[in-house]
Length: 350
Image 1 (tube, helix red, strand yellow):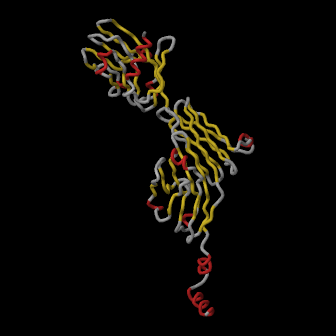
Image 2 (cartoon, rainbow, N blue to C red):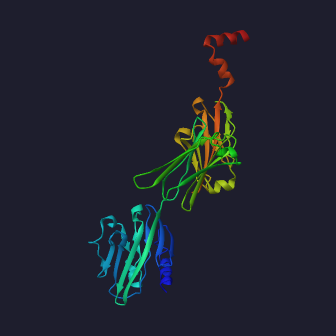
Image 3 (cartoon, rainbow, N blue to C red):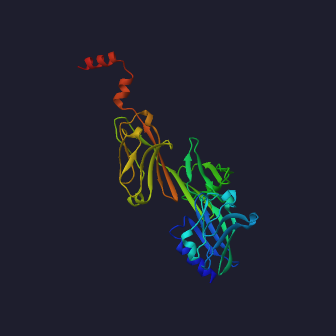
């Protein structure tokens, strides 16, 4: 019967539950809850309704640290432990219905552990135990190529400790040859106890380079490949391909960057509108249905690497194209002559 009550309570909390991932009852009677770092979490607890309700939330492993108390029909927070002040709340309108669930705001790694929910009414007493696990899932994997043909993959703010793996498409045995590929991975812990991971390796020019970061049950992937170089001139129009299907544009956010840092434009999934950076409004002519970038009015300062980035909450795909700017032929001739020489040539021609 206790298990049915717990499940019924959880279903009643759907509207207020914020990022509660799992809630299961073990053989020993504990409820296990996994929540997200810095988000809010609900610790479920139910009891048989009755008058004169008393609710105490405690943390037994920390000498019965007082998390939240309720009696005499109101919250009693004078004895609340310092780490929980201003961070807890009961669903007071649900207490007469037997709901003693606790809302805990802004989860930290220190909030992990076993909690006791003690309830008492005129009908009797009850104890429930809830175990909280806190995760900071992989949210973004950043991938870049340096001028030395070294590719870097990184992700920050992760818990538990992540793993990073490299692969290529099509697969290559060379990806795992230490004598051919430079591969170095480092993991650091920040002041909040979260993990930052970075890895570098030699770039595979003829393949799609794939970096995958995994933590717990969450996995995120970033890919990078390089296309053939493109040539353009100040007087010409240039098209830099992205090769994206229209169906992909409906599910991915699109970002064009210059030299992998300066944003040229962004296009949000499912829309035909694009936001062009102020510095690029004169050069950006249009964005094709396939995501290709149309440029004109170029100068030598626009020579460099253009990156087409497609991203979702799960994956990031990066395509690099080098644009070489070649001066117009008329400019080549006139650049080497003085104004008087040009006049003389014209007169001689006449």
